[in-house]
Length: 129
Image (cartoon, rainbow, N blue to C red; front, side, top):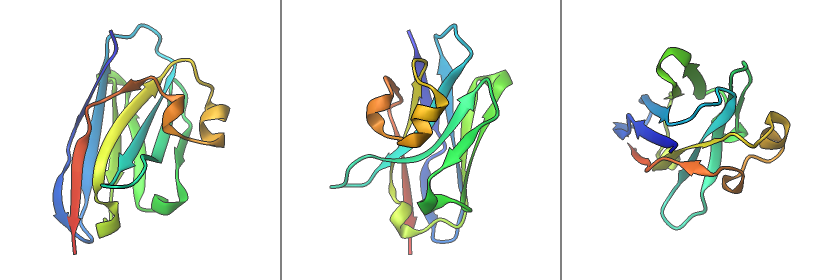
């Protein structure tokens, strides 16, 4: 059974940095897509970034481009989300997601929660001004 475990959330002041990690287990196919989403109170879950595990493609949404970076550590089956220059509006619960039955083209054409079947429990990020 696939499991995704996130870590690395916390509280920082505006301008600070955090690194989120998501470790996947329980799968056999090493080619899949992992993504980060976030959800602020009262708002819909929105896409942040995605990465093609088994390839070298990454995608970051415009609102965080230049500040957030997604990367993979193949040896540890882990994906990282490096978040710099954090703003109060980045405050949200951040979720890791994975999907094996998804092409990269479909994912980046419209990265949305409904494309992903596997989710972590979430990790809170709070940015104070």
